[in-house]
Image (cartoon, rainbow, N blue to C red; front, side, top):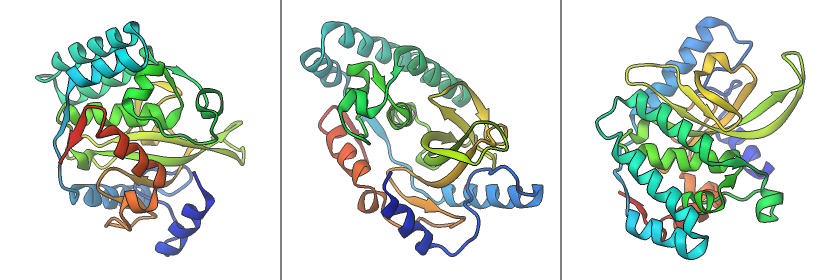
Length: 250
């Protein structure tokens, strides 16, 4: 995640606190206010239907990778088809578990020979490996396919504190946040943690900004501060490729 984007976000909003997600150390009243602001902003985002053309998706897995990865694609299709009548929270938990079981964490340097590469769902499932962004992106699109509203899902760029609660050491990380209907606190889907947990249970995550296909939010803004594809080139590039790989929306 480039430092230029972070500088731009600092200038875009003059708030002192990154909100939309709970940050450890703030007073309860502030946490509540920030979560309510984030929920209100998310509700303003229009829904877009996501479709997965599985015949094409599975065919590409077979052609570009191998028959075993195509079989995983069929398992994904079967799993998703079985969830259409499930409760939304069951969809979230099942999708989270599926990809945690099917994927192995690997850094971009080792996998793509690049410092920061955002893979498409096809690339991630084809490789069977990925880093935090890749986990978040594939879970995001499959939950959208299952009918979870755009307004309930955000990809969140965070600084993850490592080394204990008093540590000042952080590293760049990305998670997927999901808002239950009528709830102001999101649940966090994290590639490094098997369970889906409320944001209040993740004080190690310090949110910087969040985005989806519709908007880019930072520091308590109730409205999107910019087009996500205009400001996030890796997101724009990933979306362009995704549309050619059997996944569409709009």
